[in-house]
Length: 518
Image (cartoon, rainbow, N blue to C red; front, side):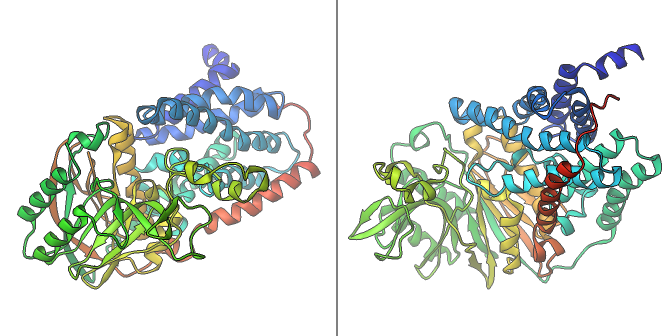
């Protein structure tokens, strides 16, 4: 007991222990490690009593937040060492901001009832806003800790993933605030109990099913052209493999992000896309594949930042999913959620409009163009998206496709930049939450793995091995129903944003009553 009392009052030990528990609650650590998120956040709340000020709260909690970021996202450094370190250091700083506000709430004189609503609202608002700016990084949203146990969080079909965050922080606050036991039990147990019931009884009938072919090429992302002498050789290889695997029932083929090595230029077919169109005509099956895509614009209709001119027209280059139709036409989707500094210079649209920066050639620093519309591909009469990598970790972006009647979800990705680390495992697991939120089957076509199929209730149907070449066909169920979350989006985020604004006002009206030490 004496040793626990010593630990309980050592702020640096508490901070580091919080970071350790929060890091272990995320995949690749399986359930029940997810449950460590509750004591982990309780320890963060303990720092509100061990810190003399909101500034000290940020200073002390930073150690734990940094450890959490390192444990969960160390793999960022495999893609770029400097960028990964910078991202981890910066994200931990941003996470101290809601904790500073929570410190003020803890030390205010407002009632326990009010603070029990406002504390989770503040942390949820941080996550909600972190999804919505150019330095966005939603990977460490608390809700992602339950990606390995979707059967416990089926209620996100109502709230979205942010509902898990609210449940976690509210439960932790009630536990730490010594709320009556029956209240704690109700908050802790009712949401998962309802989820288990829904998981057992909710089995909507599909209206149709479509057979698709999923490819996992297993290219080495660290080698120029994946080690091939030119862009045509790997393309011919994939086309032949696909030809051998297509069945008479196949209605679409999906290849992953960056599977086409050549730059595809709108209106100027090159050797690669001419070869693809030839095979697609012979298959009589459309191909959706990832490639860099040069989109040309009529003068006056181009985006604010362009890369230059091609054939007399302004153009931009996008990380895209391209749909090669059997009639020779081309559909395309431009990736919307671009990785800051890796794919897109943050706030480039804003900076490019400011006169003080007119000496900078923004076409040289902007990197990929940003997509803004949820465009889909027509597969056998149904609309289907091909979300590209990072797109799939944004619940509100994904649900927009389903709200426009997407029959199922497809994620094309290249997780090979991270090597054989936690990154590709987490990316696969997070897709299980998208399935539950939207009530749609999710298919993944990944370059190195993990590819697979996830049922609409979050259960895994198919999962390939990492660093293997693989392909498979699957009869995907088509659903038409729309969940509450699909229809109304992040309503809980907007509500908590209002509550957080109220919290900032209330800490002024109910100032701190001196240091609390418990």
